[in-house]
Length: 135
Image (tube, rainbow, N blue to C red; front, side, top):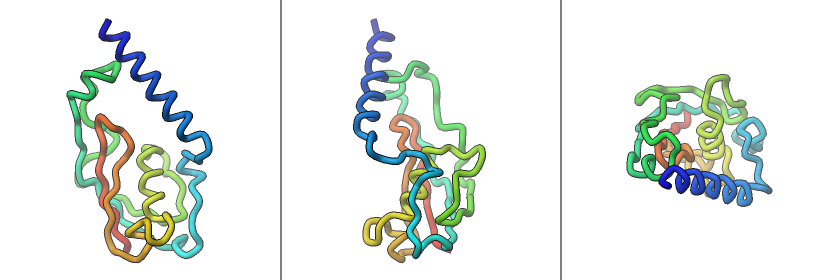
């Protein structure tokens, strides 16, 4: 019974996300880049890798998944605002990062001139938190 509930919740969540994102580009490779920030460079640092075991046990097919294995705490990457998702980099995390640096002025601290911004990947049960610094 519990596995059926998890499967239903997972399918419902995916369907809701698909309906909500129908009109958006979700590929990191297709993210639009503003002309004013296209040559700017940024340093991305992995600040934390969280794990919410209570959510994983309720909603994931594999409740023992644990923290995200794609990144290590303290790891750094240098990117340019106009760059594409590097091979091996989580595309959803890269999409969050690139949206932060290329967002409309005033909406994104890094794009509007501030030196540092914080963003996270969209994984709700095991998010990775990134610090983005303009170089």
